[in-house]
Image (cartoon, rainbow, N blue to C red; front, side):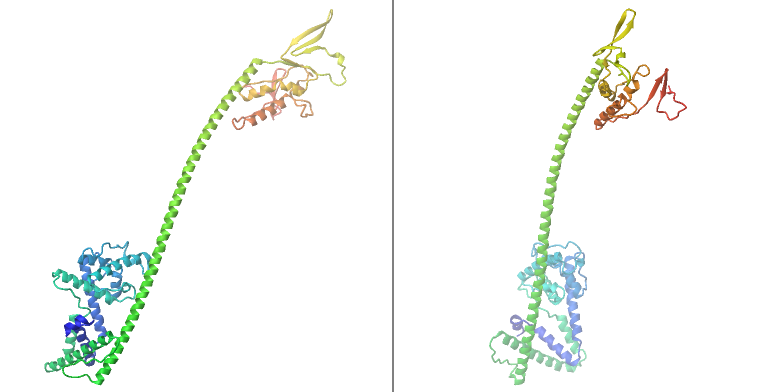
Amino acid sequence: MAAAAEGAFSFSVASVVEDVLQQHGNRHRELDLESRRAEEAASRRYEAAGWLRKMVGVVAAKDLPAEPSEEEFRLGLRSGIILCNVLNKVQPGAVPKVVESPCDAALIPDGAALSAFQYFENVRNFLVAIQELGIPTLEASDLEQGGKTTRVVNSVLALKSYCDWKQSGGNGVWKFGGNSSSPSLSMLVRAVLLDKKPEEVPTLVESVLSKVVEEFEQRISSQYETAKPAPREMTISHGNKPPTKSTFGDRKMEDKNANTIQKERFQKSCISDEESKRQLLKQKMIFDQQQRDILDLKNTIHTTKAGMKFMQMKFQEEFHNLGLHIHGLAHAASGYHRVLEENRKLYNQVQDLKGSIRVYCRVRPFLSGQPNSLSTVDHIEDGNITINTPSRHGKGRKSFCFNKVFGPSATQAEVFSDMQPLVRSVLDGYNVCIFAYGQTGSGKTYTMTGPRELTEKSRGVNYRALGDLFIIADQRKDTLCYDVSVQMIEIYNEQVRDLLVTDGTNKRYPFF
């Protein structure tokens, strides 16, 4: 009967005996059931953790303590790395690829997108592999915060049982015994028989066995009623005793309660599964969005690099063209300066050919009130002048030759025009001296300086020469820089005097 129950129903004889002993112990000794269950769950959890640490090694299982709490057990296994590595040791190649953690898994907070996707892949591969092996599985949500750790422990212990079965030779058909454990059952038996006298033991055993048979029959009846859509009467014999009305009513009430509990558990499981699916879907959406953002960022970086390379190429091309243009300008400027230098040399050669010493003659006009008949000038032609001179035999004439003769009607501008080219020679490095010579009242000061009241037309050689000097220097300022200094001296009675000195007591020009 026990073998049939274990093969066809979802409960075992050991679990029925354990429940009866618990009820009996509660009636007689009032044992702390919750405390015992907690101790049993902790013992199973320690057993599972110890086996996992033994399989992968202490270093690989550093996140899983030897005696973990439920939270530590969940955190140690949530990445799926330990589970996948242990499964590969038990069944080589069961999980082809294990996604390793990039950093300490304990430091990754719950809900991190990358970690969630990582352990989602590992846990999914683990669940698929153990399901193919026929090992009791668990839900991915059991490894989430608030999940059922008991199912995780049960699955690990089932994997341990499968490993032991393979190591012993793998004879027969492997089958996991479920959540019941012989130490737990023996603990209950010892607890019930602890304070009993030897003569009371047979009576107690008979009572317990009777309760076990009755409980077993009730569970079979309840499961049979649940499996059938239409209720029907069942007659289950216990020895030769037919069921009473009260027993049948109790069974119906228990069946109803069991159905209600199963529905509630199923609804909670569905809600938990839906919530887990929503969380995984949300995390997957976050991960996908991050992947798209990374791709967009990579495309942006690629576009930026291509743009920078294009700009660099254009800049290099512009610099090359600019260098060629500057080289052309430099070559043209060099040619210009060469031609300019040749022009200066030719210009100054022309000035030299005209003579390094030039003598000009200017005839002073009559002053106001003087008659024109007193003039001794007979004839002026180009560079020759003829003077009437008295002699013993009548009028005589004498001719004098100059570079040029300016008549009484010559203006200041005409006088300077023949000297103006010499100013340019000064700026080209030649020494030029222009001075006026003649007796007192012959017009030297007027020619060199001008009248007392200067106008634009009446300016003399000095002012006009300095003006041209500064005009030409300004025109050449981009290529040449000139320093101009001025001295003004007077030569009188074979003495040279500085006319710009501020000390009136010493006007003699210093000679060194």
